[in-house]
Length: 633
Image (cartoon, rainbow, N blue to C red):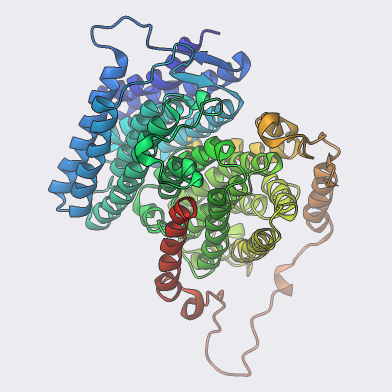
């Protein structure tokens, strides 16, 4: 199918339907426009998969003003928009960063000789971008459908749907972009969309959280534009497809830099990726964003915003293989994976638990890109896909539970299996899928562990293994505790009043089915994404896979066997064990008249945010300094 048509369906149509939804009167008409957008997005992503890799150039389209010029104008208008909000909210960091970002952008667009290659295309649809498009479009479509039920009665629903649809279309454009200046524009549009969605309720907490998200992502945008400027200077191109074949040329004025400095542009790109994915020390913007409506949280964590950062890391990985920069990225990612999992243990708010969990798993993906072997990048892509499905389900489940019991506190979810069985079961499935076999996340961790164990630098290999082991232990702790609260029942809980909103329930069921289908997805599909034998050589990375077993030169794993065991563990007790009400006895309290209370342990005095972040943030800043020192010393 024509690439230009595919781009129109995945990028322009959602934006146009968003505008139409905004203008339509009445919620009834709006919801049909939203459903249409969801259907078009899902179908278009499947057409992208069916059509396969191809290149698309839009420069040949005849317009009164060249499209590339329009993108430049829009980029500067975006910076003016950020400056406006900075002035409006009296947020001086936003104002300063909007102005600072304009400086390298002006130089890049007006003073740097343009490198227009006749062979390079504006957009490239390859295997990696196809997988990303499926994540964005299908999971994003389900979140849109869910939003119809969740946002009913909200007074700001028109701008909400407009920004949500624009967000999805822009994210597709970002992952297809081959021209780095176009990627920069779409990158900043994600910043604007997330900013507007986080401040949806327009109360003090929402405005404060959105301003924090804005200045941190603008800081990352400054790093991104600086990196693109340096790529243009060093490599003489601004197209991703040409970077591997481009001859590195340090201009005479910069010849005093060490040879390692040729990867300096990618250090700036990695810095931008860290901010977008909220890795340490930028984690506070994503945890603060939990004040937004639950569909926004689901969108940010599963199919858009934060995935953009690790997507960029996967893209630049082949250019920094074997460098100290790559090793530092692995350390930053592993550190974020372990410490954010530890911080999640101290949380009782389910959305904050999921927020720290997201940062943690994005850190694991970043660690895999830093290990930077074909097997490690296979693990990174597998983790990215499976995490998106599971986390999308969990955030939507939290929204459903909040509607049912009026709280996001996991302590208030005790006995949910009796109060709301369907919500409890779907949530527990989502939690198990993030920590246990045979689900995709476990397979991704298995691949990551194998990658770390074969890392050539023994010290970094041991450090990465340490991060994986303890990060996984902490993750199992807080997920199993949450699941346990919901499954624990005295048998006398009053069932919650069901709301039976199919717009909210159908996406949950589809995502749950997707989790089980992921058991049978062959990881060989992901391993073929990293097809660069000249860069990675012939290493034991290609997986022979199927329903029965996953196998490579380093070992094997049987998803089907674990699925059978998992189902037996669930079904056997359900069939043979029955708990009678007369077998439930109250807790023995030695005759005292106090009512015993049962609750979880959260260890806030030991590992709470107020205790740990004052140490973790400075460590994260030191790691960022090391990121740049690695290429300049």
